[in-house]
Length: 237
Length: 237
DNA sequence: AATTATTTGTCCGTATGTATG
DNA sequence: CCATACATACGGACAAATAAT
Image (tube, rainbow over all chains, first blue to last red; front, side, top):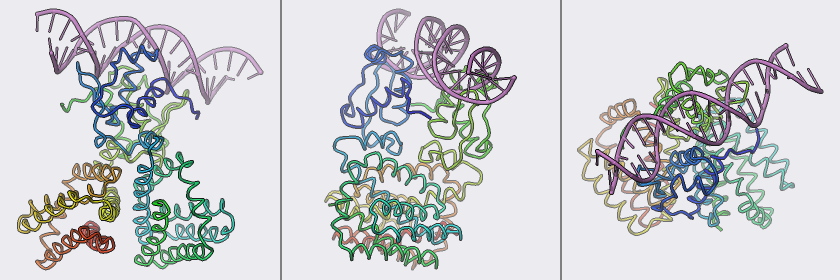
């Protein structure tokens, strides 16, 4: 697997970015196929395939004789990896990343309730090992982040909801792609958290784990809610 | 706008269904391009475009000399309108529809909290009118369903989270497409609900509306949680 | 290690279909 | 009815990658 992109994908990315990042506004027309073909020095086939990619993502609509026009943002198929990437690479992406995070939190909160109901013994074992790794890495910032990811992921997997798993995986990929914006802020925030808060956080993780083990939905949900609200708070600032 | 599908889309749907509905299992190979081209009496170009569609949705992976193989289900891009439709049209789609509903409930629950924070005056007015329509249509099953939809939708819109709105709209389209399976069951269940339960449900809707109006996040969230749990319960049975 | 065969990937020229003005 | 502009479809040629010999 290489990072090589064929011509139509290159053009697709170029046009997709322009649209999602607002350089081509809804209602505006794209140049016609022949012009695009000449401008970029590619064949009409390449242009048509790129346009097809835009159409499939509902970013544009082509009608004969009229041309290809950018559709309103509400029509766009946001839950497409490429659209998400294009949007997350925009200059003014703060509000977009916040929205992404809000969805992620919503799903993670729901996943813990499902985990209580659906977790197998081996799922629970995974969650426990993830928790003990977390406990063992309080001092190491890097390790803690990794362990924290694995802890939440083990719960997500235990939900046995493929749609949630796939959704969060998409969100994570997108958020990682724009990590340079968000992670530094979180790190700085973390430095400011006191020892006590940190201890609280470990306790909350433990509470989540134990509640899942004893199948106490209300407890699990409540603890996760508290955990998540902290993240939401960090992001909002 | 017609329902006409071009040759490659027709083939795409045919192959996509076969894969998602398990007639072609992960690890199995598709016939090579030339064979497919002959079998269906279409050009190689058409076959290639259909395969491209499958590849874009991560249902298959093509490698030179080896051929095109079905990827594991966990790799599939589930959040694609077509994949969702193919999956919802499968024979054994009960568990899939349940998962869809679980995601929908998760998002709706999160949306109400966001609505409390983000709703404009006009958003709140929309929610109120939706509620009064609901109140006015207690007796009419048909009207009630419609009003209920509009009530929840008005809250969703008030969240001002485009990603959530787009996600739920996708879910709804899919669920409506397989309505024949789920709605009749809900209707039957509803008939069995007593007058009292029905009155409770109205009260819960009212509680949600008022909590949003006075910007009381905890109250709104709690009331919505109760409402949603009922739906979840209905579905589970 | 080099060669060959096989299969996908890419590009293009061209022809036909279709809807608009 | 014609000219325009885009969509769809076909098939040929060649490039790239890899398995097998």
